[in-house]
Image 1 (cartoon, rainbow over the protein chains, first blue to last red):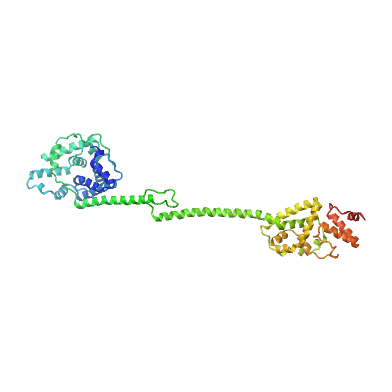
Image 2: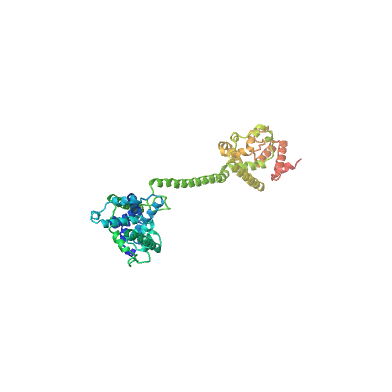
Length: 184
Length: 303
């Protein structure tokens, strides 16, 4: 998508000119996918909330300098990814293992998605979720950006700061591991 | 801030990895978590506050552009940034005024110093040439042409040495240039007097008038100062004792050569030939270039 005609970029520019409704529309379009990306990356709801709010604060602060040279979603995820990396460098312990599984399981789940009626599907989703959590950080981020955001290899490379072939290799390893977990 | 667009067109179908479609379908069935209402409210509130801050800054900037230029603010006439608080503007003003007042004080002091330095030269000349200097010059010229009278020598030392009361305090600085100018004019008068006798006679007449104005000069402090600077003949003669001769023919150091010659004639006429001869000889000795009248010249040649 061309950044010049990116509707998200137009909304961001409108907000920079003082249109609060444009920001509200922009926020409504990206709030869910950003939150899920953060939640499944850090696996800590409180930390996810902090990162989520901090990411949007960066967007608000950069409104006057914003230039639509890339897709808004790519820029937004890049900010979130950098904040997440900075948090990991500060040695903030991440929740992992059973604790992370419990935390994710305790989150509100739609009623129709409860595993009472589809136990096998539930087991498969739970298996996928655990497999994603057990991936290395770089592979997990690449998989989440690919499956959740449906970003291209180049966009994932732009968000993570890695090369395209590196991203492709990470995705290959990650998906192979996920398929192995699901086939067990 | 922003990431450059990748060279690959995202609209084209990306390279599909093996098993990706199955994993993507299963992933979409995972719970779709979303941020809570409190988080949404916090983010939207932050966005609204940012716009309010922008509006306030823009309003201040526009008001400042419309406002008249601040006095003394020539470096930043109307910056687009937020206006400085009133306290900082008040701090700048005294600094500007202190500099200006310092420069003005320096200029005033330099002008006063220059004026005081120039005032003795400019003010003494007209005063000296106006009233005091001519009389003093005439007196000096008369004294130089007069014979060395024994009267000053006979005067008491204390009286001769003591100046008039007006001259007792040290003369101010302004009196010295005046005295110098008066001396110069007296010297020039002497030169003129030696060259022409008519001029001397006129000076003698003027001196006679000046002698009558001695009291007025004593009342005038400037004239007293000028007279106190040099051992004035008038002061010395005033202090000298009266001679034994009569008042009409008595020798007076203040007399001009013409007056002295008149007195000598009167002495000859009264029969005091010896005294007349002595005074005539003294006059000749004092004024060797003075052209004597024929009758006195004849008396002088007689033994």
